[in-house]
Image (tube, rainbow, N blue to C red; front, side, top):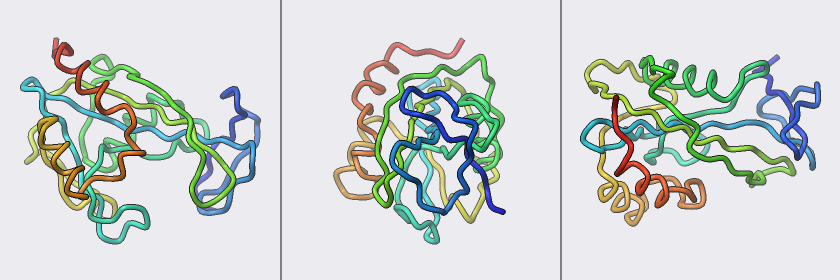
Amino acid sequence: MGELWDIYDQCRSKTGRFHERGKPMVKGDYHLIVQVWIVNSIKEFLITKRSPSQSFWPNRWHATGGCAVAGDDSLTTALKETQEKLGVSLNPQNGRLFTSYTKPHDKDDGSAFYDIWLFAQDIELSDMVLQEEEICDAKWASPQEIRSIIENGGFVPASECPYLDELFAFCREFTLD
């Protein structure tokens, strides 16, 4: 059996049912996805390039993230996904849930709750160990560089990051402690 997700109802309550990744979801079923944005002390964001073998948006830049597995909450998922995909341990005290939104799936009748996490942490690129089947590159980029990548079609679609302007504005004031 593959990876299992908790199924939530539209009010974000767990139903006690599970969904196997890769199988179609049905209307009224939701699962949890996290996106992890990391900002450093000079206000650059860590973005990662999806591997060419990825079924969604291969070779495009995005924030790190992934689906919550059964039993994991949002913060646990954010920390695990960053560790698995980048080999980086984030300090939970440096993070906050920035925003959440709901979006229907493109390929089936299910939907997802998206939790967008923001962590303030300086990380050396040379210390990262990328999970090559998922991530093929990582770099620090300013908001202007990210907007340029979006305009040139090298980032995931803007619909996947409807909060970016708000995030960039917020991060002008967000600092490392």
